[in-house]
Length: 173
Image 1 (cartoon, rainbow, N blue to C red):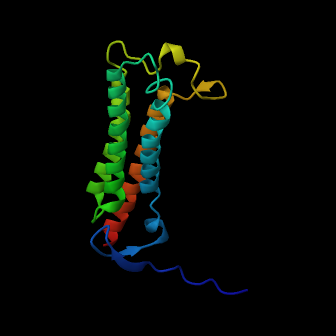
Image 2 (image 1 turned 180 degrees about the vertical axis):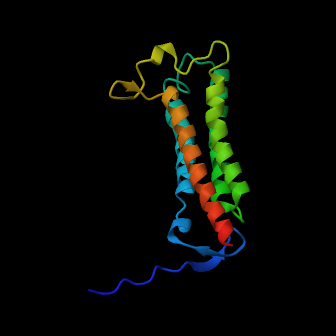
Image 3 (image 1 turned 180 degrees about the horizontal axis):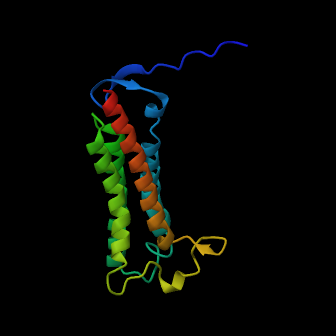
C-alpha cells in the first residue's frame, strides 16, 4: 500500500482580487458565494421578461399605454441593476469586499423594493383576473410571497460565503 503523501501546500499566484500574491487553497479558490449571487442576478433579470412580457402585463389590452410604460421601466430597471451587479462581481478590476457589497446590494435592492411596494395603498402582487395563473409546487403557489424571501435568503447566503472567502484570502496575503 503506498504511503500517504504530505498534505498539499498552498500554492501562490498573482491574484487580481487582492492586488498581489496570495496563498490559494482549493477552498479559497472556489467562489460558490459569488456564483450564487450571480445566478440570482441573472434569474432576477430574466424573470422580469418572463413575468411581464405576456398577456397579464405588457400585452394586456386593458392596460393603458402609460401603465405599459411603467412596466417597461420596471423591466429595464431590474435588468440594469442586475447587469451592474454582474459588472461589479466579475468585470471591474480589483475585485474586493467593496465590489461584493455593491454587487450584492444592487440585486438585493430589487427584491427589497418589490417587498416594500406591497406596502403601498391599493397594491397587490397579482391581478385578480390572473390569480389562477400562478405556478405551483404541489399546492404551494410560487409567486412574490415565495420569491422575495427565497431570493433575499440566497443573496445573504452567497454574500456570507463570498465574504468569508475574501477574508481568508486577505489573511493569507
